[in-house]
Length: 264
Length: 270
Image (cartoon, rainbow over all chains, first blue to last red; front, side, top):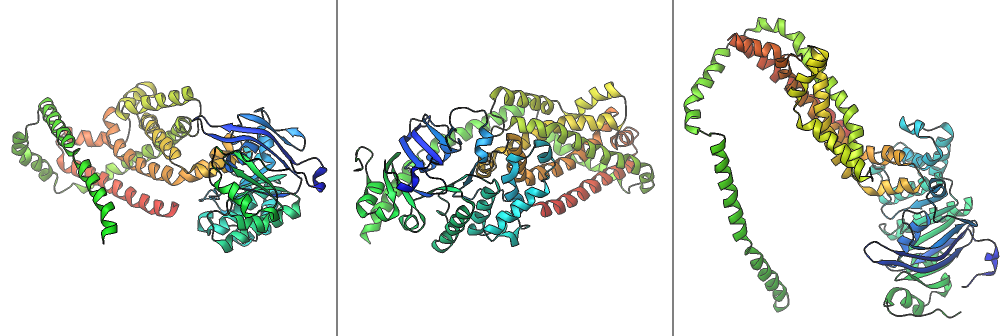
């Protein structure tokens, strides 16, 4: 595996030998190995069905891997069910469909990012401490949505909803953000805006980002490093400058049977 | 011209092939009609006798006019009691039905035995009608509106619990996954991702069952469980038709008012 010189430090995230076969027999991931440096903006590039979503969902265990291990700052985060909530708290997630609770206000949606820090008794009466409200408003300001804090989420446009969803992820004060096709349902102008907000917030706060994309041009613009996936396997790993036509062909048009190995 | 015709022909041919199923439909409809006729014999359907009796029914209503309005002085208290019973019956129904509905919803409760137990309890509450529950509760806690409210609460709890469970099962799973991903506990996910989505349906069902509750509470009095039903039955037994007319008009007015109020509330909850 190629490891750039600056990444000799302990990786933020280390994915080792990860495989996932779903109950129906579909193999989504096949022996995936990826190291992610702290604070890195890593784009996982690949066509629909390459296993990108499954990969991200294995990290915060929305999907249980069939084999392999994942380490976060050296600690193993796969296997045990105990402490799962404390693990998930460190990973913010952003979805293609935004997944805001539409009938709740923008502010309450962001505050749900704080739930994992709070007791159920307080949650029962739908109340949050002042400190959480401050965090939520700050996070909204980072994505420039604080002026719509009291509006209902379903009154926002798609791009605005995704910015609120990013604020919700930031409110968790996460170490890592997992973004699963965050701009796939947005137009190009709004998509670039949303990706810029995500990258800036992550840079300022030192958050590592794993971002799934299927559009090459966004990967070229925003990625520091790109991992190319095809049929559940990693078929490319390197800088976005190295994305040649040949490599793109390998990512997007490789048949499942073909076993092309990357040259070292 | 030639190019688009071929696929059109293909689809039309497929459509014609599907029409062959119509034979089965006709056979099914014939079987259904036969079954209904067979059951008609079971309920002694006698349309001719009904036609002959229609004037008799009309005469009952004729005797009710003009309503004896002075009777309403006696009625307003049991009428209010009817509303109280419906209101508290619904409150008890929510207290019983909401937790059971949550336990019965397949996307909330993963344990199949727990879900089955909740469903069985809801079925039991539902299958015994509120009048029968009222008989039990009158025997248990004595005459009056309290056993009436308990009876409505238990029976409606079974119905509302079932409806709550269905409303929860129909919500968008996306926000549920998003909140689970933040590390929120199961109960927090239910409170912040599931309840807000199902809330409009919850409110709609409750308003509708409040209206049903008022209607039910008008007959609970027949078994001594309070409300306006006692006056209704008494006036009918004493052949005081003009008083019966007042009672029926009052019930109609209450149901109409509640219908208007619930339309108003529902327009504001969405």
